[in-house]
Amino acid sequence: MGIVGFIIWLIVGGIVGWLASLVMRTDAQQGILLNIVVGIVGAFIGGLLFGGSINNGITVMTFITSLVGAIILLAIVNLVRRGSVR
Image 1 (cartoon, helix red, strand yellow):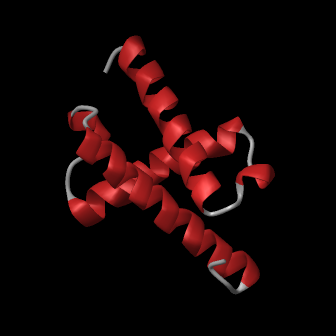
Image 2 (cartoon, rainbow, N blue to C red; image 1 turned 45 degrees about the vertical axis):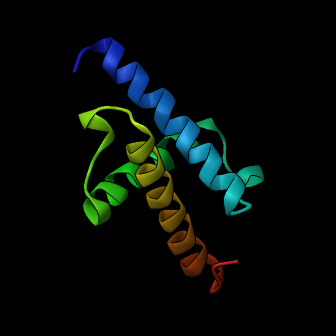
């Protein structure tokens, strides 16, 4: 992966993390760096659970898979921090 691929990976991770934080109502608590981390880790989780990965190419399905993985990640974090998913 070249520098352009890495930058696209960060941008897509940021968008996925931001959308997941909106869904889970944690956007006010997160900055752009945490959104990127959530998006990238969420893409990894989604890829493990559902197959497909953003590394294979950005399609609607890999984007949705990444978003679902990021939402699952935020739900787990909320569960651990607050004792409720929200």
